[in-house]
Image (cartoon, rainbow, N blue to C red; front, side):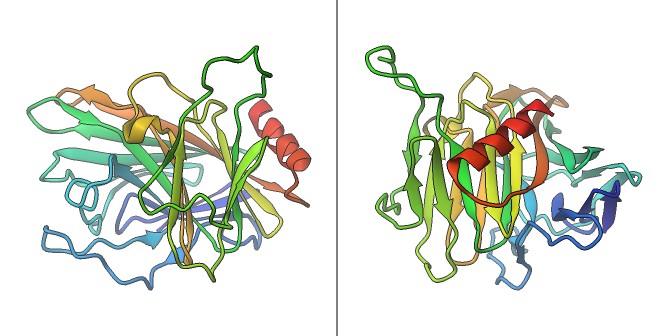
Length: 287
């Protein structure tokens, strides 16, 4: 394991498998905001080894596919870094010829920059969509800002897509389709999986739990996006909730690299009402 700390925030990155970020917490006794799913049973794959969800934060190739997505990331990584930043690089996947990499940098306070990379080590150009997935601890609520309000008839064109999957019930009690925010609550007593996606025009999505707000910032980018145009997706079941961001699809030639950047922040929060959440998101956007 490789640990980063600046006295305000601590990050733990695996060096034995991944790339995976296993822990994110306030320094000096804070609770890990990520979920630990190390006890979950492994998922069989066609590659002679099992894929393990483990928890934490990972990098996938989208769209989700039993072969191209679930390649086991169980081998040791190449690690370069120090106490303030680290880069971890996965061996090249033999079937996709993709090399996955994460760089984590401490920016001050509780801010962390995570740069996800995919490099094409094959002989032909390939299309890649970088998919950054954060497994969060139980009992919280994901918060996705709605686009800025504009009244009818000033706003005649659609603001963004909202995407669902075939197993989704939009009447599920974990959904709150609010005017300013969409909320998705994690409830350990509700086993049925649910998932929504959207094109996030704001570039800020969060997860509130146990007096903290975990914020993921990303830059909404033009271009083709998978899953009917999603750059944010939220998945929930009884064991965890995932907040996910996705890059546009990009064609990269041999030895070319595509990047996708998130910035993470941990903030104290007293309530989950719209006004306090809006203030917290605005604070993150100014930093």
